[in-house]
Amino acid sequence: MNDGTDHGSWSGRGTGAPPSTRTAPLPGMPSPATPGRTDDGSRPHRDANSGRSPKPRPTRRRRVVRGTVLLLAVLVTASAGTYVWADTELDQEVDLGALPDRAPDGKGTNYLIVGSDSRAGLSEQARKDLRTGSAEGRRTDSMILLHTGANGTTMLSLPRDSWVTIPPYVRPETGRSYRAEPDKLNAAFSLGGPGLLVRAVESNTGLHVDHYAEIGFAGFVGVVDAVGGVDMCLERDVQDDNSGADLRKGCQTLDGGEALAFVRQRKQEARGDLGRTRNQQRFLTALAKKAVTPGTLLNPARSFPTLDAGLDTLVVDKDTGLRDLMTLFRAMRGVTAGGGRQINVPVSDPAFATSKGSAVKWDDRRARTLFAELRDDRPVTLPQEK
Image (cartoon, rainbow, N blue to C red):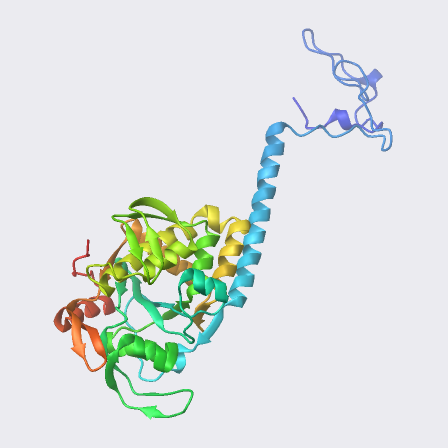
């Protein structure tokens, strides 16, 4: 029976009885090894410096296991360091807790996702190449209210030209107060920034906004390029002089510039801005699917550029951290896997004549039903658009 002693590493001090006092082996059994010798009677090779026998070389399998463990440790450590850095770099400029007249909390979680037309971070040449124009400031280019809860995820697009009531506000530049008045939804953003936009969304839907996330043109392009482009299948050719879109029908990988042109174009959409919001939803879910794959999340060479590109123009509220953003992306990714719905707010007139020009008028009855379902985290009954 093996007593666990490694005779190959014996150092010259025998621990058993002297050879002359050992019991003779039974017939048919091999002779026990003499101390200081291997089983075949020869002396083991010793290290000339230490006087000890060298450790056996690790097997190929053991080397592979060790290398894999080391690689995973490096990846996890690097990824953790990347996320700690990114979490501290978030621009948490929006204080939702300081806003007056908030809608009461509902069930589930609501994210207001805003694509702004901020040119911050774009050079003059980039503005020309991307056909973004040279307007200063920030205006909304898209707005999506994303609800997550017990019945999956609902991506609800709010057309920027929606005719709503803007709550009373104070212009930050002048300090002048304004009463509540009807206007287009995107006017809330240009008049009072993210805070007034959140209040306008809450007061017109009754839904409490838990998190706010806004990204500008430069950040959008940077994220798409950092993940290696986004795969999209187009049902027809897309050409638009205003946005610079020039895409062919079929499946293809869009780079940052092409993606920005695609989500901004609306002139050739039969439903105008409503068709554009549908394209924006499709693209965001495809981007989320690409961004949260293991090949991106666990690869520092890809996750760092992705985060770095997005942080340039990403604005969130004070209670939103990187973990919340990852939850948001996973929720959007879940929509493509059948775990949610993509819808527009119900509309009764997409070309409603107003004192501020043509606007989008909501179908009040159907919209109220939808908002109540989301507030109570009940299944959404509004049919999903094809």
